[in-house]
Every structure is written in C-alpha cells, then in structure tokens.
Length: 265
Image (cartoon, rainbow, N blue to C red):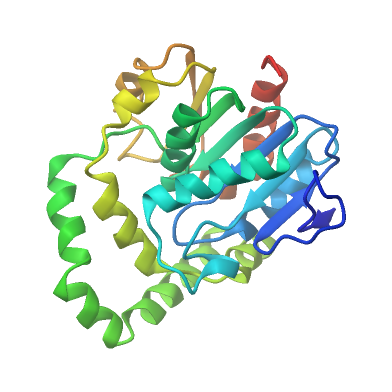
C-alpha cells in the first residue's frame, strides 16, 4: 500500500491523501464521516487495493487539514478537485454518514467524472427539528462549550465507545487521524438547508444506498430517499449501526466491490 501518491504524478506526495492500488485500476474515492478522518478507511484500502485504485482524502477541518474550518461547499469542491487532479477517467464515490452527502453533492456536479455513488448511512433529508438543534450547536453555546474544553471531552467519549465497540485495529485507525467533534455541529448546521432529494434526482449514475439494520434514525426513510434516484438499489446490512464500514468492514468492502464491478467505467 502506498500513502499520499497521486496517480497523475506518480511520485508526488499529497498531504491528507491515502492511496492504494494502481492508477490503471478503476478508481474508488472514499469520503470519511465528519468528525473522523481518512484513517477510518484503512481496512477498506487494504481489502480493495488488489482490484481498485483507492483514494481516501481528508476533508477540510479534519486529519491533515484540521487547522481549517469545515464547510460543506468547500468539502464538495475538494472532492471535485481530487477527481480532476488524480483520477484519469471516472471514479466511484463512496461516502459514509455526512461524507455521503458530500459525495452526493459532488456527483451531481460532476456527471462526466462519476461512474457510481455509494451512500452509506446517508439517506435522509434532515428533518426541520434538527435545524434548531444544529443552529444552537454553532451559536454561543458552541463557543462556550469549546472554551471549556468540550471538544476534548467529546473526543474522549468517542474513543471510549470505539474501543468498546470495535476491535483494537479499527479503534486505532479511528484515533490515528484525530477526532474533530466540532465539525459535526458545523456540518449539521449547513446540511439542514440542503434538499438532498433534489440533488439525488440530478445524479445520472447508479446509486447504492447502504443502511445498518441497527441504525434506527436512517433505516426507515431510506426507501423514500432512494426513490428519487434514477438508478438506485438498497442494501440493509445486518449487525451494523450508523458506521457500517467500521461495524462490518469486510462485508462493506465486498458490497462496494460488487457494486463497482457492475458499473460502466
């Protein structure tokens, strides 16, 4: 496996990009969940590299780019730039949680560069009640919370849960790129204003929507969400919650690989 190697310039190191496989293979761009980093995809890079050119970038405000703030539109532009800079032909975008919404928005804007779209736990227009919570989280309460060390507290809670829920290798990669809980609140405040049904209707490529059987928030609205896709199918993943790639890394990778093989590259 090679880290930070761009296919169009084989020996140029790219900060905040993990890469595996060869550039001649079909490209998969893995977009991490907000609050984590590209490192969460390490199991998928290892499992998919023999067949695909796998790229896992850090979004703004995360990992190697943690000094920046997270903004949804800037994250989308980063993915579009990555497609232009490092993907020779087309790519399949794979996003988890809020990373899936970033992938969806990028796919709608880059129909000539995207062959397929995988939305993992990203199948719901955020309900209006979340707008109130999200805006509270980015107002004065947020500033006070951060000033009192709230982000470090949340990061410790996330890691405690990760160590309890996942095996030690996955928990290691969750922690390796750093945790940015503040970005979750920042992203939610922007997501509530986006009509993702309309964005999905603008996507022409095939779409695979994955939902964890234990994800009570997203599993029910997923069928209605996917009805807005021109070419969509759904996979319900047993014994998985919101973070399917971490709960079931081998099965997740197999589903992505099977879907990617079916695409018109």
